[in-house]
Image 1 (tube, rainbow, N blue to C red):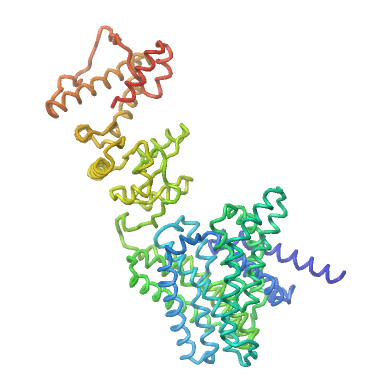
Image 2 (cartoon, rainbow, N blue to C red; image 1 turned 120 degrees about the vertical axis):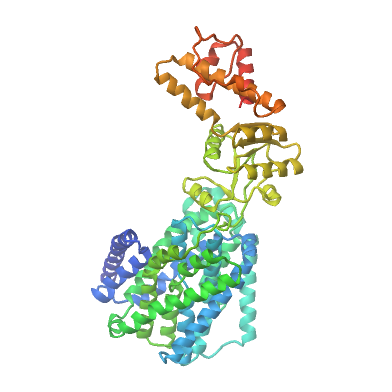
Length: 619
């Protein structure tokens, strides 16, 4: 009973610490991870309220396992294959080069023996997946080119924890006696991975289908936990890491129709256990050792961040990133990572180095995390001005294809899209501005990044399915290029275009577009109508004047198509017109969307239809 009471008290302190510290550190811009670490330090080493930090750490490592499962769920095998160069090329190079450089520096200054130098160097080479992904999510940069490359590096680092943990027994003072030969161990690992793949392909989906039919929500949650922990345990028994098993299980279920439900079921457990993991790291710190070696920490933290940033920048530039992306990546990932905590703790338990050294390394990683927001601010000062096309987002047209393909999402396109969406029509929107795509995402729009002047982009965006191609780009020359490309490749396509000015309208009519509209014409008409109403003209008279101007403009365009831009000047009003009174046209006229409902209901049904057709063909 007393033991149970102690457990309740400790749980209460940990939950209270998390609830207080995480929001506070989040508000300060330092992230929730550092808040959990701080809470653990206060509860453990400072207040001495909980002294079993190592025991809690072993349980809370499941939070890292669940994190990798969710990362795997977000990675479809096809997407993983597309990213293979960045994952296994850039990611591997980063871990190898950074790990070797840091290991050399630690050994050169005689801080640790060779075995400990390797583990510490490669552990510090890992960056924080949770911390970096949080920064990318908050800035809506996850799908940018640099965000995708940064994620590839982080993913390889997460996978690298498997061989690094396997190195620890070899570096230990007393390596355990091997119960199997290397060949047997390799065969067991391959068999376990094959069994996991077979289970994921043939057992998991049928299992979830059966459970889903029962409608038992609690059983579905239990099944999700069973899959994660079962896969992790299978890999651990095979001599691999639990994190690797959870990640593979997530990848196998990435194509499943139950992916989103699984993620929703696992997320609360992942969040709680991950928070507990970071708090347990704080509980196990030895503050006395840190205080005795504070000068070493003060020097090591900026040195670590500088080395990682320089290596990352050089590797990114060498593999094709331009300056801005290389700067963003190098100053996004200079910190140590949560897997470093796992590696240092395991190394201390195995006797590679002491618990005091592990505390020093954890302190260095923690301070580097705390300085990451400062590094992110520094990156903005090092960026060069570049065209929007250079700041590209990874082109991903999954789910594209609708009745309307809209090219361009500036002010004009945004208003037009509202009409389509309000009418219940699906619309595929592409834009070449990465900044505009990211901004639109903050308002809930799904905008595909792509250059509308490229045929492969138009095909990927579903132009063959589109009933109407709406060209809403801002620049006249880009609009003309897109229209020429569409007409050459898809001569039967219906093209609606945004016109830049009157001359551009005449050019578009010559090109044979089905409908064009000058971007300021209708808004100018409405503005003029509201102004004249404010001067005392009646509403119906103002509407009649506006419709007369619209008809005159259309008539001028017809003349200008035949005779040139100077034709029809006599139809322009250059002096005040004072009709006595203004005669209402004998035939029915169309009106803007705002006034159509006020006028058209008074007309016979046939006239309503003809007026609507006139509206559709008006400028």
